Amino acid sequence: MRSNVGGLLAFVVCAFVWPLDTHAEVTTVTIANRVVVAGGQAFGQVGPYEKLTGTIEFALDPADKHNSRIVDLEHATRGSDGRVHFSADLYVLRPVDTQKGNGALLFEIANRGRKGLLGRFNRAANGSQDPTAAADFGDGFLMKEGYTLVWVGWQFDVQPPFVRLEAPAAKVEGRVRFSFIVDEKQAEASPADLPAYLPVDANDRTVIGNPIRALSSHDSMMRIESVRVAHVMTRSPITLYSGTPLSRAASVFADHKIGVIPIVGEHERLRGVLSYADVLRAILGPKRTLN
Image (cartoon, rainbow, N blue to C red; front, side, top):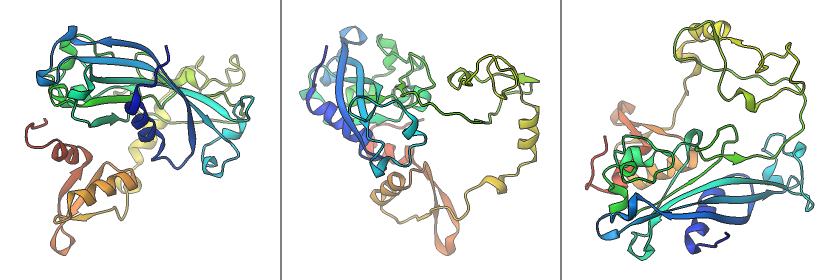
């Protein structure tokens, strides 16, 4: 079914598209399923929560100068309107009675398509990627506070139940290489997402990185062992003084897309570090200490 679900999805669309340097138009929002979660359990005065799942469809104009930074966009398949179309998974948890919500929305940039808000804020131990049962919501902190939680897929090389992006196909020929780090010493390794990067000829065993062939991790490990922190660290990092207003720090996080800011004091001496999570804790207030 298709539903417009009012201001919620309008906000989601803005949150997902507006901060980008590129320009994408949302063409359709489809809510395929809508179900009450946690067995209808009431979360304090806010009441029960519901789960909405569906897709957001986008269109990109390869001729728009704002989209010039998208690699290989010009090679992607175009629709009859000359634009490149793609879709992303949409996942929403919100109060059944939206009037009882607090009017605030938490939008998580899903790392590898994973939903981490309930684990971080609700202390949900099982890390469910499709929270439905009461146990999936931990102590219910965010629900009792009335927050709406939203996830939108943005990576194509993950699989359900993780939220993902259905990226358009691009016909590109040439060498593609990538590096990875294994968790423990081993002679060979095959990255789980490698099948998403298939060579032109799937039977060509000479292609380095062909999923048919096991990849040796020896060379990569040797290179990593020879690299020092000084070789890869960020030089002249953005810093803030300890007396800087938190609102200014929040703007720096958003503007520069960074996760940690060194905090300095007199004579530029390091006093500590401020993380994006620290800002979230301050926004949520003293009602809850996050571990």
